[in-house]
Image (cartoon, rainbow, N blue to C red; front, top):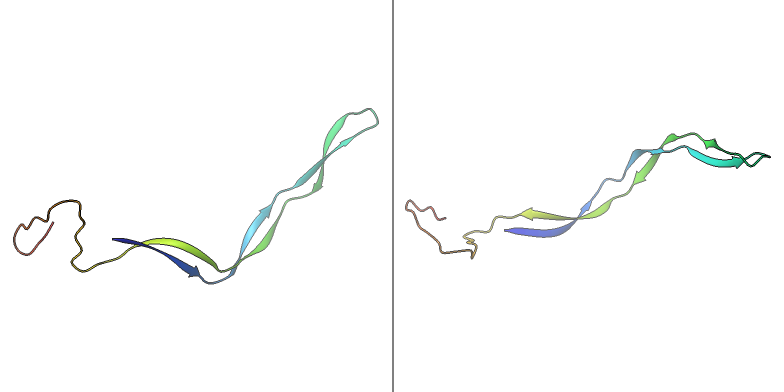
Length: 80
């Protein structure tokens, strides 16, 4: 049997994140355009806070039998 539950994932931490370079388009006196680098790309640290996640977990239920069909006893106490 499966159960869905919402759990708090603790442990705020920092992760490295790439910030891509930035360009702009400029035009000269003749109207020709060209791309100009405004800022180079760089790595930064981003805080990842604690968060809630929904998880589906498998749980054991004593003497649980799915209702998909009849229980067949094959001897020795095993049930399928």
